[in-house]
Length: 319
Image (tube, rainbow, N blue to C red; front, side):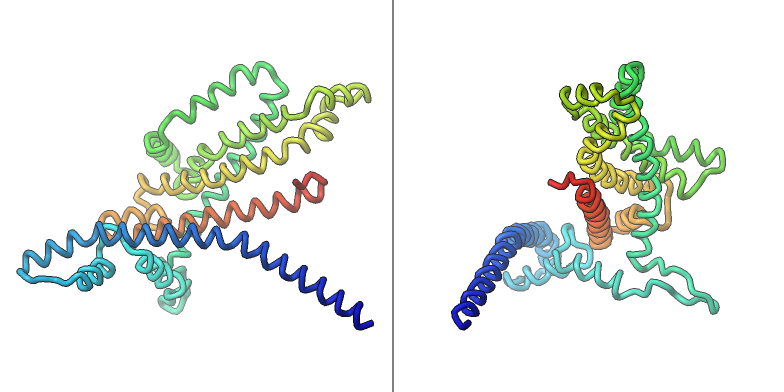
């Protein structure tokens, strides 16, 4: 019994060691890359911010030591390039440090000083635009694959639409929609959909055309109809392509919403935070808004990855 117990304990310890080794092997490269990025960021911040420090010291006729120059370069109120700890502090102060709701005249309303409030103001049209663009992309892809005329006519126009700079077309869309009474959420969602539909179209077309000739011939042998071929072969085969394109599309949708907030003069949203920060030279605010946008994009892509894993596993397509 003792020998069996020792063997079981040894096997458990070995499995635990292998598990810890796998985790460390996956985590250590990430930590190493992040450490290098932070080190380069600090070096760039010191190099860019020290010029202002030296200029001020020369104007005042004082001599600064290397330690004083370094300390000032890392703590400027409006640095050329904020240091990582300044951006992290700004993110903390504008999320955890600010309440989500504020009381005014006995009623509670969202607090515009909280960065999470601005993130939601950007995420709402992003999600709506992503749904619109995703559905439009899937429907167009199905039409392109099953209709020769749409393949020859719609696909070139879809490609040509992406050559128009979004900064040029966004104000035009907003002005036209405002003239017919559509303001706020809808214009931003449509611009978001404009950027997100194209990756979905391309990925879905590639996915629907991915089944090989032998699989298609097999279904013809079974006298499968066109809809049966679509639902039983083409659609399942296209799901890995679809999810890959959706991840690209949702990131593009977020960019579209932020760009749409710039010409509208929006008061709320991450785009509005970028505008106000640039107007008043608040570089730390600009960088915190950029990092919040990156966090939102990572969360959206991670959510799609989770849905992808669950869906493909249930369909037996998990790779």
